[in-house]
Length: 78
Figure 1 (tube, helix red, strand yellow):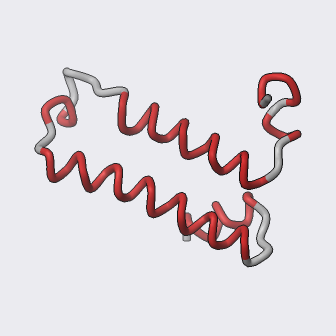
Figure 2: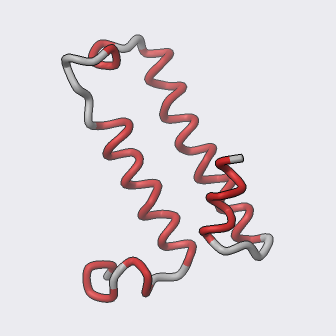
């Protein structure tokens, strides 16, 4: 759907889901064997995915409070 209407045409909740999926793909699944994360311990791996999920949940809560996705992301960055 996003490819047809573009990300801007989606509702904020759907855009948040796409943003989270992209973070999982780029931050969690794409591991570089030549970086320090190439052989990270399970605890570090678990902490990373928990942080991504927590960020998603916090932003989702902000959306339910009436914020836009851009506002919710800016609130996270503070």
